[in-house]
Image (cartoon, rainbow over all chains, first blue to last red):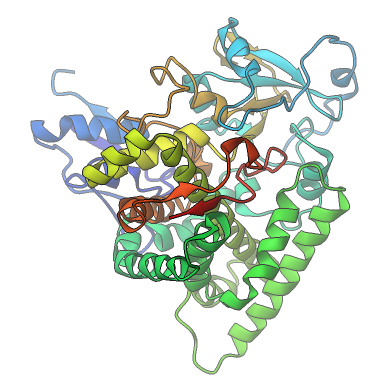
Length: 67
Length: 414
């Protein structure tokens, strides 16, 4: 799995941090998303998919390995 | 900008037989008509109080689609913006400058990002010791009332009001002044002059507060002071914009959470088996809070929008310039997204609800609201195991005519 985020649209709602705290964080300066691990291990994939579904600004994009 | 040449005159005539909006809701459910409308293919139209029509969106995925798409404007001066009541129209059309929730990107993004940091998950995490102590202290004060009180006022309103006053640096002693005006601003049945005047008085009050903060010899450590020094004094925002944001955060930070605490408490009192489950297993509180948010969806008339381009939603072509009501209260009762949606069930997975809206305008303070609600409901029934309604549920008065739904009083005994 490969994670990309659209920083231009991020509003710092923080739901990604709630859903997948091992993979996403918020920048101290502006509250916007930081991806801690762009290629998260398999045990994080479900949480990351949840984060992408919940993101209100639709900025989290996922590419599965078999794509 | 939006073209001014769009003719709105023909939109408000003809089209006879459209259902009128708003529709009558129930204490614990949105209007029954939403379910009927949801079953029809495509989107339906409703008639607004001013005679205009608007598309009504009731399915969870389609509500998310509209709210998540910036081709739908949230600027109230856009022609055909659905106005749910004359009091609302009066307020929104005369709000200068508008608060950031009534701006579109990129202007909205600029203003919102100034405050993301203040409400990010870890900022709120760091507040939890303070919130825990405060909840305990307010429970002490409630207990000192003797054995009965109006939970809505004594606890549900006091907690978020204290928290947001603390965060913003607004004197708590002024809470009666700003709470009264918040209710006036949200009253949909009010004379259109009333919310306007209340908004003006709120901004006058905050203007005085800003002056005092600027004159303070030692800068205080609060959100409004940081906003003044980081954004207003360097010229990124005007004083009027700072006032608009301060007002928005003060309003949004207390009235919403207060109503959720009271309604959440009522829901658990009315479902004693679930209340007992929560007491036995406090880890259920995270789910329970999401379910309360979903079930009650207190900002029940959100969100009005206007299409800035032609957009297809659910097989219906929404034309540029059409008004749209993407109703979060309907989305959260969509059986396509939630099994048996009218059942209150603290064990259901409800995190995908849209009670905080969706898209770029989703609630800025949601992490704070969640923290307050989770702490309250992890402790309330431990502290007051015999908490009960002091009156029959039929006697409770609900705020049907408020933009933020809630309950007038919640008399309890323990």
